[in-house]
Length: 108
Image (cartoon, rainbow, N blue to C red; front, side, top):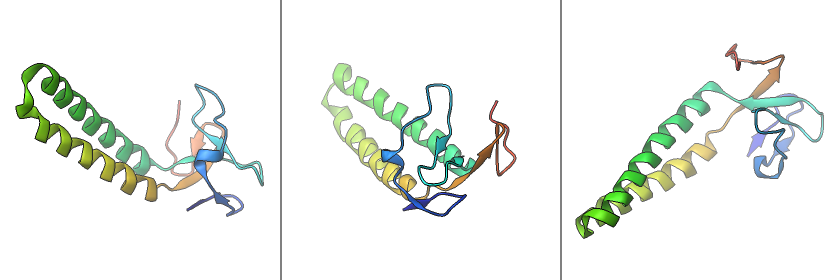
């Protein structure tokens, strides 16, 4: 389970309210410190989006092209599910202050 980078309290990210559509940081309910996911987590999320798009394309081909696309579509969704499960275990939170995270990545 992830912890707050400020006070090291265990955090369930699914229970935290989002700060708004254009704000990507979250706020710790215990200490009030803001945090964001690290750069490697964002890179993994980009890979997951690519795999999800491939799965969507295979599903469209299955719908319009016939049943020969069933196995590749199923395999792509299994791979996507495993990647999401693994990726959720690898999330690391870093402090977020003044538009920058601890890795120095500018979020503008």
